[in-house]
Length: 304
Image (cartoon, rainbow, N blue to C red; front, top):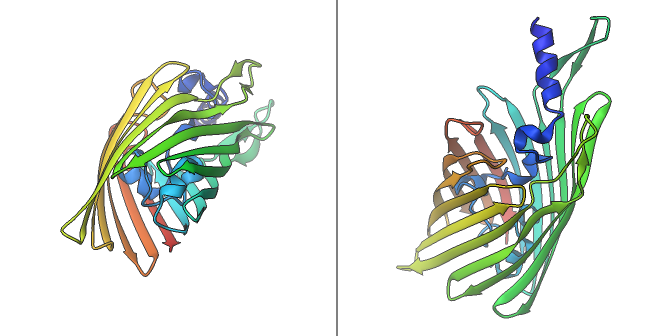
């Protein structure tokens, strides 16, 4: 009976309807420690752009860094779901005019028992997710840039069943005297055909981001952000986050995301970071009662 339960649970993953009839719902989730520390309020984020290929490439030309690279490991609800994610990202800012970014995310889900039609055990299968993205940006006015991300996302859910889709994001962004704003569309892409031969759309949304960054008393920096997403398939999500940095060396973060009926549920988060001679270490911990509960993310990186 236990093996049958495993099989039924695994087969349920084949139906994107569990995520509000949207395919590849993980493409709407954040996985890096910097973003998760602010509950995903990252659309106007310029202090760390290594993972801009997964949220907003238009932010790269506004970054103070020329090059930013990071690698991260996320344990998604380790006490229950036990999904782990590895993410790697890099961004290059050319003269605050052009930007290019690359990103990769690989998720490993719990294994389940595979049973033949005769009831014989055939070993185990470990479902996985993968997302590759390329981002390009152009700052065509001193206060305005445009960015686009194009990538491919896929899920392998059974021995003979996997699916994928092309994904794309497009954003405009402006920054004036510390005020930041961005608007665009996220997760546009091709439809996915599930195991029941029905087509499901990606969790595409119209997105808006607002932010404000301020330096004071020489060594202090405060950054606050608000993101909102309206999903074309129905549902509204919003995230608010803040970070405080002392002397460019130590950072603390906090945030809250309201998920509603969207692929990423509600949660609160706290985070911290340290930077020395360009080397960065970031941590994030998610607090909530849903799928994000007790999630822990760690990231290391380098920028100059």
